[in-house]
Length: 85
Image (tube, rainbow, N blue to C red; front, side, top):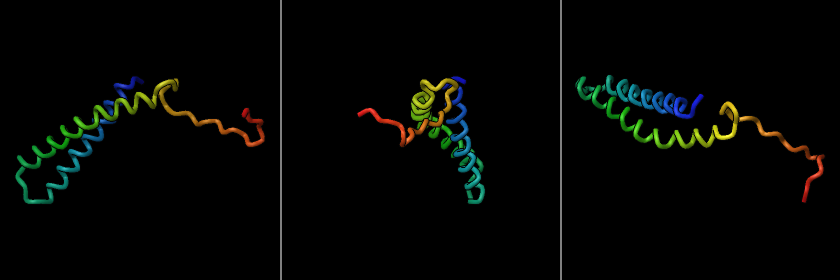
């Protein structure tokens, strides 16, 4: 998978969850539908603006030089193995 595709799925999903959370919280209050929907769209847009430039570089660094892109467990050095000093 490409970094761009995975990054887009992650930041879009988080932004949708934030917008939906805002909408659900405002349903309990005494707000107009225009305010609820407009606020949810606003929260979604702001989350996208914030998350796009932060998640993509983080994910690119994480996926660099790791084959399919997901972290591998690091081999632990044996305590009995000789160490170069």
